[in-house]
Length: 455
Ligand SMILES: Cc1cc2nc3c(=O)[nH]c(=O)nc-3n(C[C@H](O)[C@H](O)[C@H](O)COP(=O)(O)OP(=O)(O)OC[C@H]3O[C@@H](n4cnc5c(N)ncnc54)[C@H](O)[C@@H]3O)c2cc1C
Image 1 (cartoon, rainbow, N blue to C red):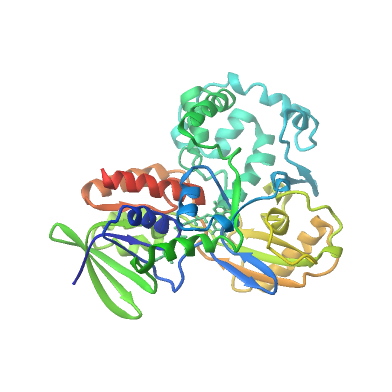
Image 2 (cartoon, rainbow, N blue to C red):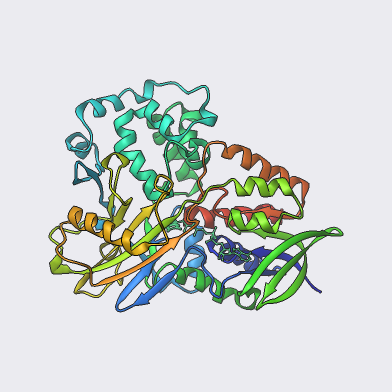
């Protein structure tokens, strides 16, 4: 039976970046990935001059590790930053796209918020901490601190853009820990933002607001594939992990490789599997862990990628794209202007867009009939964007389990994960259901995990 010091489960960006640090450390490790390709959520396709990212389209360079990995794996030449135009973001209000204000002056002038809502923000520094902050949704938190209009026309669409989530269900403490911390530590968002910026500078980190947006010339999956190539034979694809069991003082991992059952004995296991997959794998070790993992909700999201000839589009594509507040009652969450943000997403005759549909607030669709959904959404999208005629290129993907929702009560899951790790020394639970869903957070957590394992 094969023996390894460390086995990493899952070859998405969490697993691969974790493996990267062990490779650098010359550790005895192996990574097992179920699919024939690495990347997990990072999935890119090149077709007819269009470059489609079905998962993350970009990442935010919130920590230095991303660049460190890119440079070490030799992909500096393919690492790209978004065009400056990509900084401008729009929100739909009363059927019109309004630019999100980025300066105090544009905030005073914007039609996105009423004068009353703007004045309401001035009260924020004087609002105290809430008693039950621990179990508050992001909607309750923002409404209390910033007012309802700010919730409806800033936070609600933002939450759709990041989590495809429902602000009334997402826990502020678990899903937006930095925001929560501003209130807990500094007593308010405005005070905290100013003081927090100084602290981040000392730690060499960037805030999500000021971090640069990046992607790869050949799409986000090339980041994952680049790490796997650098690691080499220690990444095993087509390897579906079935179970983990205790085996003396270590663990036995059973997996199927090309339909053949295999076993490995490992001293340490780092799982970066999605929660619903980890639930099955660890069932034999801890049934209650599986219950916690199964409770984590992953809504369905459809990603629709479309290309139009430039002459069909009767508005300027001068931004990142737009998000839609729930109050606007549209049948999609928003769209990004892919070929404006990054080079190489379409040929020069066309413009490419990525549209997001579904999410936690919109789960009663018949996902079995995507054509109907696509037609309905494109009709609304074209109206909003002032586009004539139909797209000349369409691709879509339905993510049945898209993004883990850090909903109210998540704290109980987090506490249990810690307890499980204490009781099962050598097993580490990671992946995007712990410590942040963004690509930047997954990479940051891989380094934190490596450091705590190597102590
Ligand atoms: C549609 C969409 C758009 C997004 N957009 C952005 C964005 O623009 N920016 C951003 O920062 N983030 C974005 N995200 C979030 C981000 O992409 C993910 O949180 C991140 O990529 C997750 O990485 P991961 O490695 O933790 O998990 P995953 O990517 O899910 O990887 C887990 C891996 O485990 C493997 N696996 C599962 N079961 C088994 C098994 N039994 N045995 C072996 N392997 C198994 C899977 O095949 C997969 O490769 C988006 C996510 C989605 C779905």
